[in-house]
Image 1 (cartoon, helix red, strand yellow):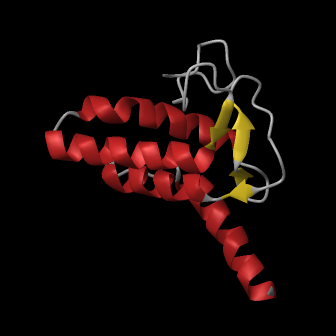
Image 2 (spheres, helix red, strand yellow; image 1 turned 90 degrees about the vertical axis):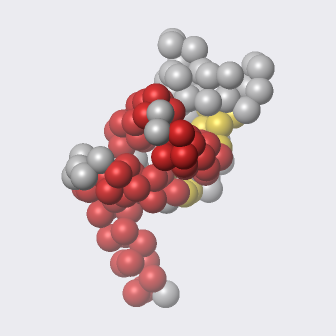
Length: 121
């Protein structure tokens, strides 16, 4: 199941028929599974959707380097106040996998804020 083209998170995986609630941590877990499957089978087709998801997530990264943990896939609206940095790990893996720096700034922003918050604790 994937989100329709006219949704804010088009082509993202959905957890069930008619579902609009989307956990970005779940999406990241699915993305890692697809990358693992591509490595096991040698079929890079598994990673095509993952790159699309990462591009959208890069655009949607918040100013503090994080993302809403839950979103409405149709509208793109954040659901609740919980935040996640899980997409940054996926982006770092994609950069390493493709010998790229495409997501480097997004990963750095997530890490910079995380490290800043840790120092202030």
